[in-house]
Every structure is written in structure tokens, then in C-alpha cells.
Amino acid sequence: MRYLEYRKDDGYISMGIDETLLLLRIKNKIPDTFRLYSFLPSCVTIGYFQRLKSAVDLEYCISNNIDYVRRITGGGNVFHDSLGEITYSIVISENNTPENILYSFEYLYRGIIEGLKILDIEAHFKPLNDLVFNLKKISGSAQTRKSGVILQHGTLMYDTNIELMEKTLKVSDKKIEIKNRVTTLSEEGCNVNIKELIKSLKQGFESIHGPSKEEKISKEELKLAKKLSEEKYKTYGWNYKK
Image (cartoon, rainbow, N blue to C red; front, side, top):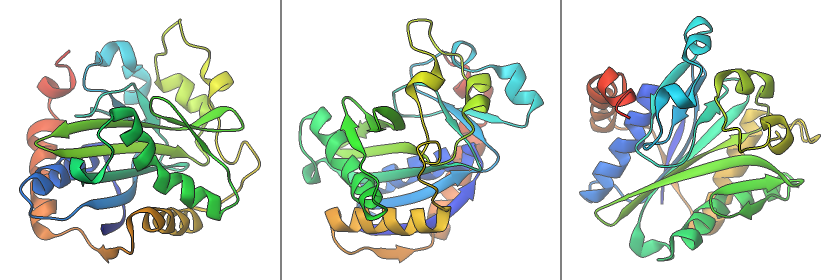
């Protein structure tokens, strides 16, 4: 499996890269690929089927330099803290994962679980698409499938500012307050820096999928990602489509 080196990009480029990898994997131009990245500046991503105004406090985000962007994957709204959250992404043939969607979520999460074990952190999969640590959520993931290829990406909150998260996200009254159901590794006493976290997560994925070849994003990939960023992910029509 191919591994793309860690990057920091804004939300539009980040989503453009993930979709680019999906499209190129469909065309068999790249092998199964995973990567780790962070958002800069901080960003809220919303699920494909969500309404932006119902999911995000737009006025707060605009006044505090926090981006917002719609994903091509399902799921709910997610706050990506540039100083305390890392995102993983994997594109993989459906032939290389369990057929059942629930089992595929769990299988693709195993790289994160095994990576955290290296740091003596025992996280557990909670259906449909979360990881929990000490019974609280530290990660959520989302998926989309196209032409026999899966894109799954998700968060890992190692030092996310929960108060800032509460201010940026609009949460359904049916859900418990964020602070009662969400935690971070640092909140649970696991103080890890991002370099050791990246190293361990990479090793975790390799323990599941085999040795990886680390590469920089190619010129072709970055060109397409920037095109998608400008023509899709930054547009009013995409972000306000629901």
C-alpha cells in the first residue's frame, strides 16, 4: 500500500486531495493509498447530506478564521482543530475490504487502533463509525463508495479544543452535549506529540496492510486537487447545496 507523506492544507485542498485519490484509484492510476494530514486553518467539514446552516455556526467561523466545507462522504459535522487533530484518509478497492459496510468501517479503522496500541492507548470501535477511549468518542469516520473503490476518512482528536468545537458546531438537541460524549487523548492523560502520533499511526496501518512506500503527492494529483478545490469545494453552490 502507498503512503502519502503528512501534509497541512486548508479544507478545500484537503477535500480535493481525498477526492483526487478516489478518482485516480478508480482509474487504476494509483494503488490503494492512505495518508495522514491536518487542516490549516482549523475547519468544519459537513457530511454530504447535511444542511450547512443547520450544522455550522457560520458567523462564529467567519469571525474566527475557521473554514467550512462540504465532504463527498456522509456522516455529520466535524471540527478539525489545526492544533490538536489529525485526519486519516484511505482509498482502497472494495475487493480488499469486507463486503459488509459495518465490517468495512471496523476493518479500515484497524490501522488507527493498532497505531494507538503502540502508544499504549486502547481504543475500541463503536458502530457505526466511531472510536472510543474510556467510553468517550475520540474519532469519527465517514465513507463513500464509487465504481468499486472506497474512500474512508476520519478524525483523531489528540488535543482538540473542545470549547472551540462547541462554538463552531450546531448539535441536535437529541444528542448529549459535546463535552459529555467527546474527549481527546490529552484530556484522558495521554500526552503525545504529533510527530510520534504520525509515526505510530503509519506503523499501525502497515501492520494491517503490509509495508508501505512513502511518497510525496504527485504533480498530477496536486493539480487535480487544486482544480477540485477552486471549481467545487470553495463554491457557494457546493457548500450550500442542501
